[in-house]
Length: 410
Image: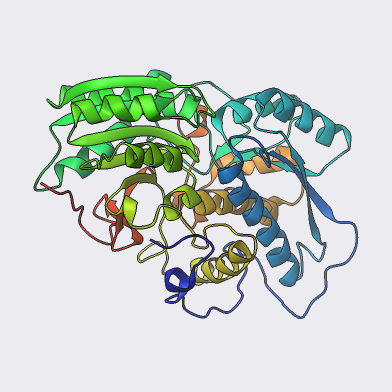
């Protein structure tokens, strides 16, 4: 796989696309200039700190959406604006940022990146009565409320918050067992972060119940860069599968540690890494498995909206040195904007009406049709499994969205 800065091969097969409205039912008139008072959407993102490698993807998506809407003539003729504050990967700062944005009178808000920041921002946003669309929330079992509208859905509408990650674990198990050579021994290494710890606990329980042998389990601090001791422990066990509860740039650093001791894992699954951390490792990560909700191929990528998103994002991301293809983070970020814009298109810039409408309706997004009818407003589970095959990201599970079967070495 190529470096994120060398994307010609990655993007060479993207089809040309004409501009269309970013959500179904919204008008798009590229010849019309929006006028009047802008509609301001406030948000907090980790533009710096350990979450930045992924949060910058969400920032890029926000920029694209605002430009896209305005090129279409705005919303009811009004321009869309976006105001983003850096939370420095700190949940406390995320909460402070939303308090400031709300005090300044933004019309709408968009959630941050990361579970802890999502939960922190929920307090001031909910008290102010604003709708709270989010691209990610790593702790869906902790209740936010009826104003919460997640794009990256976990849980398949469960009512028991202790079961929120069971569907994720079963998806991973189904993917592994669909292989002719499913792994029997597994080593877990998880970042101390709400998403990855919850993912890991559910996956470990499901895999163990299925008869897999868990040969080791470690946790490491968020922001760790030296993985030499963890790599040595993994190598000593030499499992069939290394499960990495990795986030941000962790995968890059873990693979560097593997390389330093001359170890090549037989198979690796990574939970929530930044797309660039995978792309930058080139052929070294051929065959890696990843948590995903979207990859840019049929059937999910085969719509007019998805095609235009793919082209515009690839151009903008390449210019800013980001991974230039729409994958799970970019798609989740865009789906969160689609949730918000769909409701605004239906009921206007009225947070109470937006909340009421979204709780009663389904929204068409690039990742699928999203509803908000389960605990904490999580509806159908959209966790999927991607694999890097021949240098490209492709969904391998479930079968209805897969672009190829899983390929695990014996």
